[in-house]
Length: 163
Image (cartoon, rainbow, N blue to C red; front, side):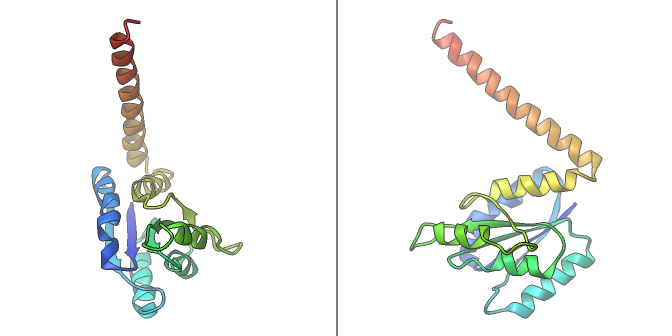
C-alpha cells in the first residue's frame, strides 16, 4: 500500500506528521508534498499524477480555511481521498470542515475530524487492507490489542474500587 499525502502549507506539518507515524507502524509507504490548490495547481496535478504512476492506494489531504485542496485532489484522481480539516486562527477549523465535507455529488472526499490526521492514516490503512491480506492482519491485530488494553484498564479500575 502506498499513500500520497499533501498539505497546503509547511505550518500544517506538525499536525500532518501524526499520520506519518501510523503509516510507518503499518509498513505503509508514502510520499509527502506541500502544494496549494490555488497557488501551485500544476505542482499539485503533477504530484497526483506521479503518485498514480506509483500505484497509490489513497490520498490524505490536509487543508485549513477554505480547504479546497482535498476536493481538487479528488478531482484529479479516481483513488480515495481523505480530507483532514485543519484548525485555523479564525474559526478553529470549522470553515475547513464544512468546505471539505460539502463536496459535490460524484466527487467524494472522506472527511475526518478537525486535525484528525491519525484517523486519516487509519482510514488509509483500512482502504489498503481491503486488498492486502498482510495489512489486514496487522490492522486486525492492532484493533484487538487496543480492545485488550481497554479490558485491562477496566480490570484495574474495578480492582481499585474493590469490585
